[in-house]
Length: 96
Ligand code: FES
Image (cartoon, rainbow, N blue to C red; front, side, top):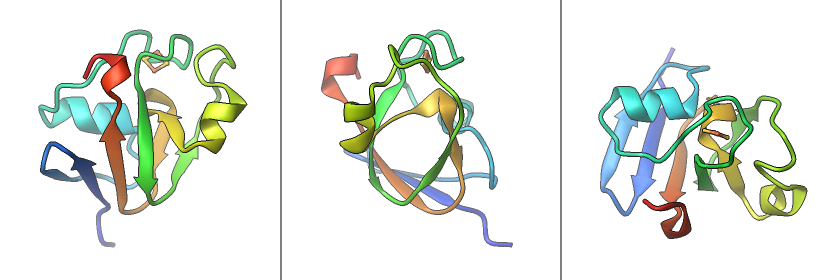
């Protein structure tokens, strides 16, 4: 099975990850500097923009990610499972 590739816009990084891997874990374990805190979908510190591709979404609090943000393509890296190739963009407002 082909492993998914995560492309990070602006950082010129492409990571080969395991299918089903949590996006935040995939980023941190491969040395990407990425803001996070709770790792449980409660704080919203790990927001980023999903530019292309799809992720599996695990449960999170509405306070961490609103429905409106979700519709705009914002995801929580700690609550997103990589299912295939995807492209993300870090959010300047989150301190990246
Ligand atoms: S690190 Fe807190 S919501 Fe992801």
